[in-house]
Length: 302
Ligand SMILES: [Zn+2]
Image (cartoon, protein in one colour):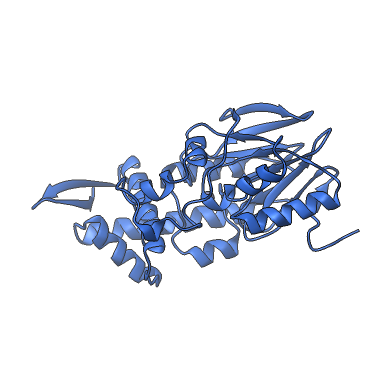
């Protein structure tokens, strides 16, 4: 039996629904546990069909972090599987319950502009029933899940490990995804690098990122991710050695170097937040500092 809705199984009882956002699948004693739920109702309907073909009811949705493309399927799935329980890390869970927080924080805390309340930045709201430990264990439907803290891409992102298979969420990106993004989204480049080292030093049987292929060994992919972030940090440091720059000026200079063309509000706020995440990382590594001049916040190399 195989259909376009069938999951890819990597070992008995563990697999994933492949897509632009991969959705992890673990078969429990009485039903299915999924890890994240994709972007929207359309994705959720595909998951529902896949579960129907397996004759498995949905028992739980385990969230890795609160980006709209990872929990946007919840609302539909919970409408068809009302008994399913939702698990999420602390802090991330607040955004899942109040998705308007995402366009709010991306918009620097101001009331969200209408252009930012689209499905890529604001999913439908979902309940969260249980908080996940940040580095710990949780048993769901007879299955032991380990959580590993992978902050950096999001504040309190966790990876999920089941029977030596690591669902690493956006702790790293597939090589193609990384090349496409050019300036990957993150909130703290330093934490992102620490999380990558943590993954590099781990030794699970297989790894699935949120965006990219399943791999048994991720050494090359992780090294590629580390180099990508280090190169961007070096570029920013070099720009700030040359000139003192405001955030806007630095972002524009970096985008010109990376051949990024920003032409809409959604891309703009994502890139701006990522750029700020690199500035935060460089500050934590004591490579840059700032001063105020003529009512401007100017960043410079130390
Ligand atoms: Zn994400």
